[in-house]
Length: 256
Image 1 (cartoon, helix red, strand yellow):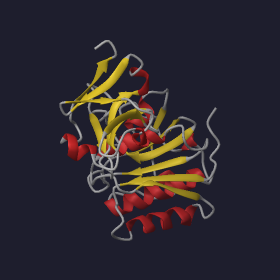
Image 2: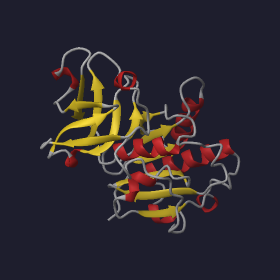
Image 3: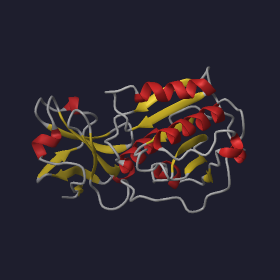
Image 4: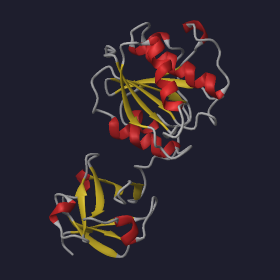
């Protein structure tokens, strides 16, 4: 059974906050869903970084009410000619360009995807980047407001664009946050038989949080994404270890 839209819309984009783009996007949403509850997941995805946007969406899966509509707008200019996809997964709806940004959020579940056909829904045939942005917003808002159902979005899509998932492959850093913490793709389920993380030529012990080590020391811990993260108490793990996104890390078995 399809989830009933709850009126919440979660936004993710690479718009940043230096101009009115985010406000204009919200204005477009509110024109079609005046009572919507709009949540800013983030607008600070690195410009055109579809892989990072996909990772952030994955992290949000299962953390919002059933029926939430996620609208992901990353690399809008580059995807102006791309199809718009709508997926249902994790009891929520996911809307974005067919450039891979929805990939990780819907990859591990039985998700149904549709290629949005704007014209029959009354939104016209948008081709320019700004027109696409507004059309995608109008669609997401109208879906959230219950003006039409998921099956009316358009034909089924079996061939979405895929990007290399950040969570696949060998263990590595997939994100460096504003504090210099290193988010890895090591799942919490993989650390039962490990005693530490090897990173930057150092052995970093597991702790419950960075506060459990002295100032200037490093700790590995399971973060809110259920992934292993490396942090320095009152410092930057990225700077101390000289690591960045893509840097390799490894688990040290407890027997060592």
